[in-house]
Image 1 (spheres, rainbow, N blue to C red):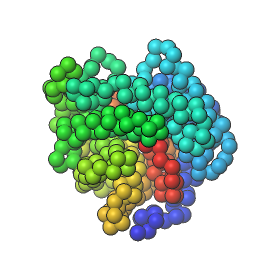
Image 2: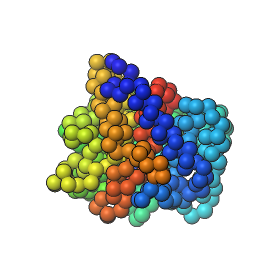
Image 3: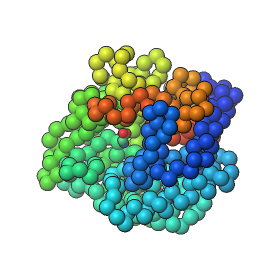
Image 4: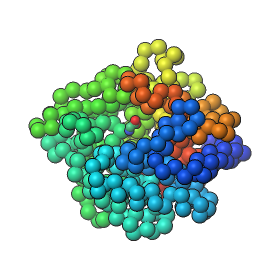
Length: 374
Ligand code: GLY
């Protein structure tokens, strides 16, 4: 297998440098709020208790690790310190603390040995574990008055529990991660590899009540970013546990994702929305899936892995050539054509920081980056 799939090393270097220039430019602005969505070239900012707050510092840590340049470390260093301060007051932290603390505190600990990073990561894992509903075997989503809701995105947060189990030597964290993943296998990942967004349980009895479309088109449709979260999340479950059912689930979802892609490898925001040709694309789903497919390629035999690697590099090539802002130095985003929440009409056809993060993460993996965030 060619190390870079359909991408040659000169292309990879060019895209990596272009992305780095974007990161360097935004870094000079020293954003104090978490960059989130860029509607017309400039990132807006959210407080650091929002679910997206780990992605910007995560990119800084990746560039620090890949270049050794102290300026990235300096820019990333106090991010998790400021995140932790928000836990002392009324805040918005919820099931997504994995997305927030894995690319900040925990990556910081892995790269620098910072004991406070480890402590914060374990505290976040404790917080997530506390959201487990024993009757329904799920981690509760969000903070609204929805104690029975479980969502497909949460599979990506399970890595913080699995990391905490290894780090602390306490298997409770792993029991909870696997229980939630098994719930998703029973109720949220369909036999054809498609996925629902929201499963609603009776929080008292634990019985399944209904499905909701959530950020997807309908309860029985397939939100493409949710499908990418499931692909990548189940691959991570297998990497930590080595239990074949998680690898099989990731492969099933991967096959659905790849087979459902249009010619240019970037999906519509939902794989089952009518009139897909005229619907907005979601470049974040493509970037997440590309990084997840590279993970899957590492976890399978060389012959099978080559299929996932090939699909990942086709996605990355298309994102770089058709969905990047590389020709526009003023634009702060890296990828355009991202969709946040189509049913609510929020952040449609914009740049979103998590699309940029997973694109950079996937490029780094192609360069041979060996650390893992999720
Ligand atoms: N995890 C939230 C989203 O994917 O929009």
